[in-house]
Length: 415
Image (cartoon, rainbow, N blue to C red; front, side, top):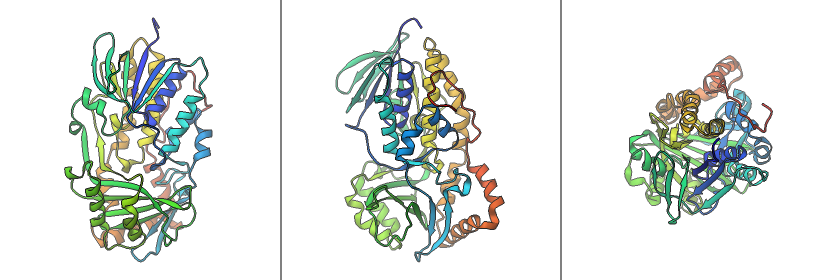
């Protein structure tokens, strides 16, 4: 390497912090910018399975992950009368089902990464971490990427990594409008923390799922038994008026769930006071290329498969590991590094994104008869005589289970 390279990472979420950690371990000076003023706590539960768990082991993250892992034992399906129709333990699909055997909140996983970054030895690359900061403009040439930040600061970098999520501002600046790469999949999803409803009747560690025509309500216990995470997905046509309009988003939820039972009244009564209300479209990002010149995209910014896949965190971790590994392997040839990163990850992304429209329709039957059929089907699949069928389903839903993860110098784990 003729001289040390400087890398800018846009986004301080899981993808951004994972790639920063690996770059720093390789001795590469790294700047991370994050729009938020501080790390975001809590959030939706994410899981580790198959190749993403292998990568977490390689990165030495599993001790921290196990310390923060949620006590999630499975899902119980509730009908309109509050009866339990079916139980699906996490082990039913070998830990590869809807509930994996290792689940952790997004905020806790991000903190595990930040803790690993903070514990890096002195000989690691130099870290410059900036909260409440973002890229205002950038211009690249044959030698560098010239960046002007929202704060007014100006700096040059050899490479820029966009890890700023589904609505990536960096992607829009460099590759084109958001709409050019986004495919709405027919539903919206929201989640927020509420006081645990007294009448949920859920056992410790079990996620309750209550499907109604066109929507699904789920209640996930938090580590603190006093609170739970309400998760609502609803199948409706796209509506631009919902974007950024919390009042309209919450009214849509009320309209879709009004008149339904179980814990729905408690959710609707407390939704307006939720401190962490989140709502967005269920969408997929498809791009012909993930890099342009010295700029490359990572995680949801490059290849969001939608929450329906359950693989967003997996793709973020695996992609970060691959991208950092390839940059560290050929620091003087970023074009080769970007090409190898895409060649390695693209097959897994294609497999994950396949059939997501069908998943949205399957999970949101629009009639009471359709809901009853889905509930009955789940009960049959969960029954003891269907163990051979579950073995087949385990194979089908375990997307990427056989994905070959390459090794790179400096892996801290033992897999």
